[in-house]
Amino acid sequence: MKRITFISFLLFIFIACNNKDAGNSVQNDDQAAVYLKQGDSIVKITFDTLRKTVIKAISTKGLSGALMLCNVQAKPITGMYASEGITVGRVTDKNRNPENTLSAFDQAVWEKYRDQVAKKDSLKSVLISRNNEFHYYKPIFIQPMCLNCHGTPGKEISKELLTVIDSLYPADRAKGYKAGDLRGMWHIVFTKQMAGKD
Ligand code: HEC
Image 1 (cartoon, rainbow, N blue to C red):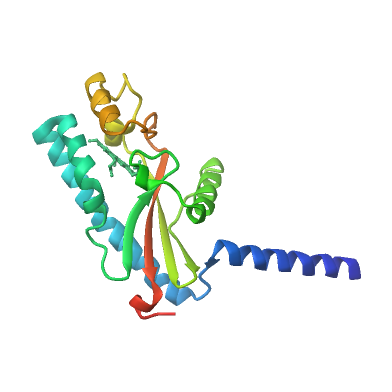
Image 2: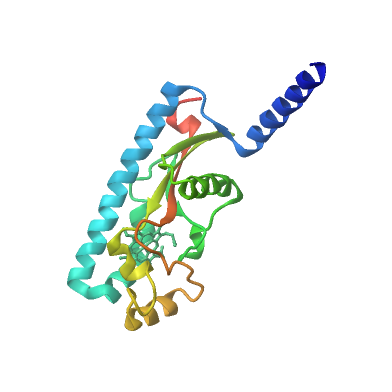
């Protein structure tokens, strides 16, 4: 019995230390709900703007034109609704833009999402407290229209477009997806002091 108590104690220490390294899920439900809601609305408005811009560009400039527009505009549009103390970005394991790689910290969240996909669980936004910041993540899934630029070369991605992608992004890894695939995550960082919370 004593032995079991001791093992539980060790396990507790291990989990506690582990949590500290990886950042903590936010304990205070009310506070978490506020940031999760704010994150959800930033993602919604940013994604709407991005998608509308891409769809309009496809209809007026064709796919190559839309792709070139993404090359210049995707980052500025993604950061459009950021403000003082709030940064907005997208990260993934198979990135097109070299700036969108997963940090070691993002990696832990990404692996959890991957596990949930494997188990066919539904994926939700998460909020993690770390040092002086709250990190909000939300999964991004591939929709049929995304396949024009992220699908299989020669099938959904035309040869002509493939040439444009490869010339703009020689190290591109963001091809070969199927509809419904997990593509990446929104990552919003709220700096606590700026947001007036702790
Ligand atoms: C017209 C082509 C095009 C379409 C359609 C498109 N994308 Fe992209 N996507 C790009 C380009 C180009 C980039 C790199 C942008 C940059 O340089 O910042 C990109 C980047 C991304 C990124 C950032 C991570 C990375 O790989 O750099 C995500 C996430 C993403 N796309 C998801 C989607 C989703 C989801 C859809 C459908 C709703 C979609 N894309 C539709 C061209 C496209």
